[in-house]
Each structure stands twice: as structure tokens, then as C-alpha cells.
Image (cartoon, rainbow, N blue to C red; front, top):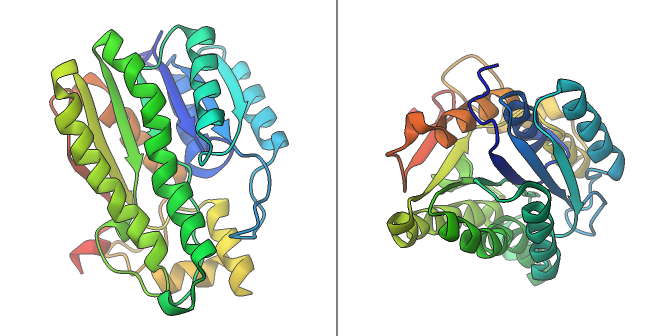
Length: 269
């Protein structure tokens, strides 16, 4: 542990499991305070099991055992301006500021575009894209005041290519690139950087949810959707967390508006 982020605070949406959880642990190991925001309950669509309060409590215990950064848990819906505003204010009160925003919360479900209902389309776009906008809406004013900060949007390889039966998911992930580049332009005068990260399939409970909806297995989902050049069906959440540590650090101090691809060679095919 280098303690590179000692005294810094990261706000993570979708923090209870998967990539959000890995990021929380990675930054806490480096001394950061972590604000973990998560819905922590099941939603109507996509109707697979999501994270729970127990997942947040487990994460809090793990961070406490590290003995470095502190953890504050907030429950709420990224589609709710009120929920995010309260969580951001709670984070400022607990830790004094927010230095890094990781917009991680996201969902996906298979379906042909012309067969999707309006409600299904809205659910994915609102969680994946509007949720990032709302989190940033309340974090950015604090970053402007301190004239520093890093925003990292968790997009996907789906944000850089078309995806069969995942048009609403792909649209939301492409949209994150637009937000990333626009924020980079708007916020550069305040020393705030904006980036997006684009992983290939990641080995998280997210895959369990997709498999549950499809009546298949996570392994079959990976084999069907990956096609990585490197001989791995998917990467690990810790691989994403390691990239985030680099992107949020001073080692990347002049990187903004960029897309960091972590795809095991998928997009090269």
C-alpha cells in the first residue's frame, strides 16, 4: 500500500458488488475514504437479483478491517435526484469533500430493439446514463469549489461497438462517451478531469443476472459475448480497479476526455 489517495474521497455508485466493490476496496487500501451508494434491492426491470443491504454491510466491514480509509454507506436510486443530492451532501459532511466520482451503477438485459417496451428502454437509459448525469450534477459544484477532481464513467466495449440484443445497453454506454467529453471541456478550467473506461466482460454478479434472465449459465454468457483476443472469457473486477487507480492518480494528471479501453483485445478483432 502506497497510501497515494490518503485523505482523498471517492464517491462510487453501484458500490455494493462487482466493479464498484472492487474499486471501493482498492481505493480504501490506498488510504482513500469511500462513499458507497447503492440501491441495495431488487428492481422490476431487469428483474434479476441485485445487491442488498447485507452486501453494503459486508463491504463496510472489509474496509474497516483494512485500517486505512473510512467508509460511509448510502442507499438510494441513481434515477432519483433527491437520493443522490442527499448522499453527496452526506459524503461532504462525513469526509469534507469529494475528489473522485466513479459512475459505476448499471444494468443490462437482452432484447431485440423492436420488442423492447418503452419502460424497458427507459429503465436501462435512466440507470446507466441519467444516473451518471445526476451523480455528476451534485458532485461537480463541490469539485469546482476545490478546483480539482476526477470523474470516471464506467462505460463498456458496448460503448464502442454495436451489440446484438443489447441496443438499449449500448446506447447508454455510447452516451457516457458524450458526457465524458463534454464534461472534459466544461470542467478543464477548474482542474477537473473526465474520463471513461471501457472493459470487456467482467467476472461479476452482473453476469449471474444476465444468465438468470436467459435461463443459461454465466460461462455460456461469457463464451457467447466475449471473443477476446487474449485467452480469457472475461477480466476480473480487480483489473478494472487497478485501471481506476491509475486514471484517478497524478500519474494521469494530463489525461482528460479520453476513453481507456480494457478489453483483452476484443475491439481489435
